[in-house]
Amino acid sequence: PARTQRRHAVPSGLSASEMASFAGAAITLQIRAAGLGVGPAKSAARNLTARGEGPGLTFLPTFTRNNGSGSSRQRKTRRGHAVTMASAGGDKVTSASAAAAGAFGGDLPADKVKQLQSKTLGMMFASYMSIYFVRKPFSVVKAPMQDALGMSTASIAGIDSAFLGLYAIGQLTLPALGDRLGARKMLVVGYLISAVACLLFGVTSNPMLLALAWGINGLAQSVAYPLHVKILNPWFRPTERGTAMGLWATSQQVGGVLSTALAAFLLGVAGWRFAIFAPAAFVVVSAAMLMFVPVDPPWCKTEKAKSNDGEDLVVGDCDAKPPPGMLEVLRIPKLGMLMASYFFVKIVRYCLIFWLPFYLARECGMAVGVAGYMSCIFDLGGVAGGIATGIVCDKYFAGRRTILGAGMCVALTVAILCYQRASGMGMVTNGAVMGIIGLLVAGPDALLGSSSISDTCEAAGYGSEVMGTASGLVNGAGSVGAVLQGALTAFIADRYGWGALFNTLAAMSAIAVVTLLAAVPDTAANAGEPSLPNAGAGAAIATA
Image 1 (tube, helix red, strand yellow):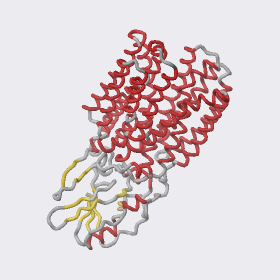
Image 2 (cartoon, helix red, strand yellow):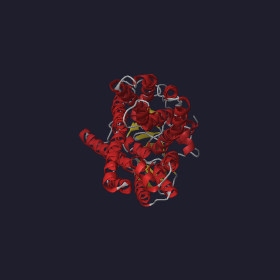
Image 3 (spheres, one colour):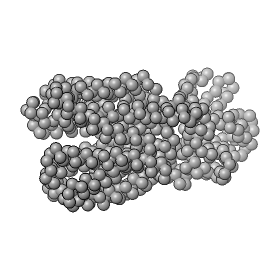
Image 4 (cartoon, helix red, strand yellow):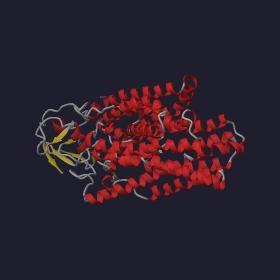
């Protein structure tokens, strides 16, 4: 790949001794511990040792050149532990990382690391859960708002479309700013704008202004999911990440239930306007929490300084590297397949979320209230699916999680094809199959939105510097699917019937199987990493 070639290119302007040193070990420096064979490091070991977890260490050195005047110039690296390499001519090559060699969490005791991980996971859970208090109330107040303002159904649908459309656009574009300006800053600003938009929505009656306010709300909160993924990513080892992200992802279901209940209560007590803007207080509290509570791992703290010649020097690994452009991120191998997978999975999931109560009431003859409660089984299955998928991925599919996602989509295809018949076989059978579908669709949804993105970026040699952009692109593609499902569902169900709709959803799930298998990172053969000759030219290696 072009990126790999550029990353390993010989720097220009080096002295003869520096060239000799670079030729021997600058492309990839391997340090072998007990039990590790000679040759290119296994990619699984490469993924782990980028965080200091395994015996095999793969490095890209950082050059420190003496220019003869006492100043030095440090060439930054993408990853690596502290290494000093002395050449025959006496020049030194240095690579620095904030993580202590051989231990995740640096010098902190293991119990302290676990305590910090739990605290951060809980804080990020509460933070993302609060987003639903500025997202869900509108679905609760649609009917009374329509009656109070005399709005048409098309105007109500236009407000929904404004939110979903700008939300999708925001996810595709805005999270990249989090890689440049900082995830915390972007989240705080987004939360506060979202709260102001809800306040404006609650005090106006003009349909155009309502759509504008709700669209701004969608745009402001579009950064939330990708940047939460970016913040959480360095807190957990790759072998812990699936479980952690699976637990965190259940904040969507918990937030949805709590925000709906609160909006319904406020609607009955104080009217639809208060039910919209009062819950926005939760995101204001979350913004304050994010503003004053540290969100970066202490082992990823970065130190910024200036060299004698005025060049910025950065030591550390979380956000230390300058982020690449969006086009470069789009060229990361397999990322496009993750985007395609999430597009199809989101169509299936959001169609069922939005239309199951309608289907149960119209086609299964249930009362509206009973249909609403019955559809909650789908969400409960989703909670179990997100957690279980994360645990299984960490234990058996670390680094290759999309294989499990593809298997779940195979089962999901079969379950969807069976659901229409099962829904007519009584409430028990209906609920059982509905819960299974919820479990099977939530698993791929959870891993595609978080841990699989980390696997894909790390397999290509990237770290936290691209996580905001990459997560935004993948989640943005999913949001486009969520937007399109509304028109797709209405068209197919009206024109061809519900049986054709379920067949279409099964086909979408089957396509996701193919794209998920195509998205498996190339970790088995060190894809893109050129093999190295043995270090020569008198290079002597010593760990710092």
